[in-house]
Length: 261
Image (cartoon, rainbow, N blue to C red; front, side, top):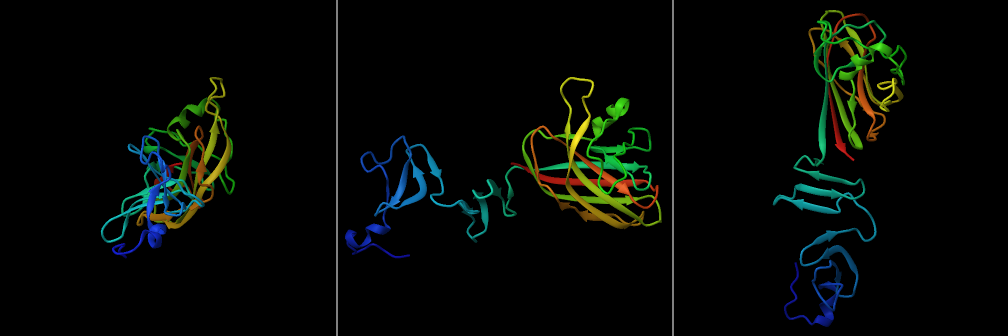
């Protein structure tokens, strides 16, 4: 880094920084920092506030804090409107949503809801709810008098979120190898105080994937492919599993990593 010692201001003024308010200097109103020839920087300061705002372009590194070895600990990404923290640089609003199902008893080729939390379906603690036999789960559902079972299968989205990753762990109770198909879905759920409350429509595949050779001697790990990452506030999210092969019980755990948008 160079030194200004012995150099004339006429030769160095471009490298000097000053506030834009040349009359009042630093005051209660933030004033932009400029160089000596009046080129604006992304920084504004006042006697009680500090602001960083890009002048020309948003970037993934608008603001950074590093440790002594140069690893980022805090990054403000104005291109994607994300604040990242820690040495792993995950979004500061990262959360985890978990679905768990123990002994889901399927009909081959049918999609079934996976409960929130840990629930044993075969013991009568919960009831399997199917969502069609197509390549993807049904995009709408009116379960009639069985809608109440759906309560522990859907998660209300309280704010706009972005799905970052979905991982599935699965096994079953048989030696026969099975093929499992997974879907993370979002739906619009009726909640207007009418007799249609709880009905689902507008289904969108958020993430999907497949596991092969699933049996009782393994726990298959599958990273789903994100198909649509953005989910708006007021939607509900559901996870569904299909045993493509037979009626063997399904044991499944699903971890959804997301951040508040």
